[in-house]
Image (cartoon, rainbow, N blue to C red; front, side):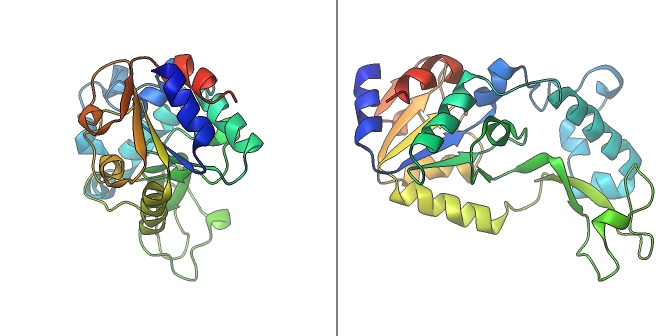
Length: 238
């Protein structure tokens, strides 16, 4: 089956990659819940990753994310990330990367135009709609930084529970899913929507790459049991 999928890759004029947490597992990226260690073990992630939690205790939530950012600085893209980036560089415009991950490893590997549906943990944005006085380069404080005029706070640039996905990125992901001839669904459980729904709306073939069962196996034309780092270098080496 691996050879057949490799042939599909060669034939496809456009490929979409939908990646989830398993994509980064071999880089040593702690999962959302694995980040609950030490000082943070008494907290539920769902109680920290919300706008309400941030407004109630911005310092605590900011420091939790600071600890996650510190851990991510210690990891590197794995062979799966690098295989995707290398394919894109060899074939400009032929592959779109859509990710549920906030770790930025696709971008660090060299992938361009990554559609990060859940944001990027290394980036910040304003908590409230910025006013003319809100200048990211002129904030005060650090946990979190604030606008010195109106007090608007900087927050992690990720999608929190109860928030909508960024509309521009989601619309572009939907277009890529509908237009592709092949979708590689890599390292995702297929349980988180609307991202998982992309694999059910594509008109192209669907290949699931995952070491264990996923909720999208029934939508797949092929299921390959293995990790991104194990399988993608072979599948994308043309």
